[in-house]
Length: 503
Ligand code: AHR
Image (cartoon, rainbow, N blue to C red; front, side):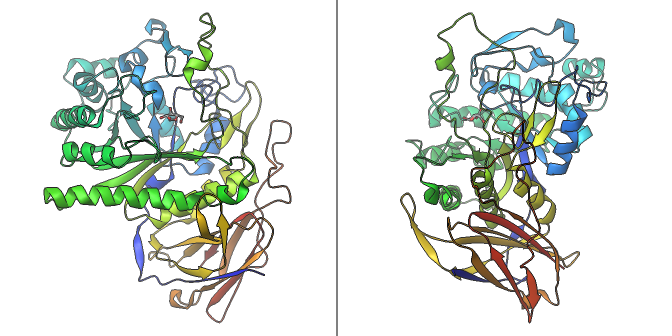
């Protein structure tokens, strides 16, 4: 039987786990907002029209900051359309997703929904087809207490207290040719710098995210980050990373190893940011906001594919509604391990997206809401990964993949909370056929016992939760986990994700 060994020491930390690592993303895309979080006619809807069954699942998921309102959508969006009396709000054609946007839900409603679910707003401004002034305007509307035309308009709209939005994204995927108003790195870097400087004049307490590459395969990846940061280093706090993965051509072995690709992606962007830091002689570090990540099978969607029928601009169409299986959930659990392993520099991340659109939560209009397979590793990691991420020294068996060469069979990370003395270990077994035994040296954690265990696995690695069978896949306890003589041993079934809490 394959095996792996790892050693934990609470003194060797990567960095504190920032709660913002467990963020998500709500875009005005498909049924994420309409018929997703918002459905006034639904039996569970609250007086504001938000589905309370969805709210309960969002709370259970343990989502911290939520990026909004896009995504590609934001590059054609006029923020002022989305505030004020609903009956006066314009209906617009959304060029990014070839849909009709009613603006029924906007900034104030979404901020109110976030208060109900206990998450923080991370707001993206349109730097595709708009510029400095509109970014400053929405900031004035959202964050200035009163006494200006826009802050007083917010008060008149029923929001007396400012929204106090701290995290702002300076556009979205500005290197992508699919993006309305995309630019080269020089032009975007200058615009982002001007916008950041202007925004900071209004509010000195902002955290700003500049756009990195849309993915690590973009032709300008690396040089984009370098040029953009040369222009914006003093103005921003984060550079964004986006990554979507899928199983291609039945190559499950490579798919199970995509977290190694995320590891390299993060390390490469960190290296570029630190190169610019050295070139400019600065002490401040730029961290990563990994503000779009997930498994996504429908990545080839482009709005042009639907434009053949010019009459058809649907409202809340069923777009990008991927159904996730057991293997997808194991990969999502592994991507979370990768983020935690880089907790010193990845201090914000957003699972894209939250409801219906490549999402852990699905809904049926007038019907139920349910958890996709990917819900479980996210919710459990968000709840148990508290305190510091620990350096993990791992040795063990490997296997060879077509895309990433030789990779470890087991990947793992651990956290330790000095306040409570509790620790947690998160593990995946990437073997398609064999269980793997893992031995963890926990002696330096003191006298610990297993508090809880969760394993996600199934004989059918393509099993999924669907409307017809909403609880087909879940997580169960891992009875093999035990601590003796300062060592935790646990057996990981093939294609599985496991969390063990120790205290
Ligand atoms: O999350 C779906 C889309 O993927 C987003 O709108 C865009 O930013 C990315 O390309």
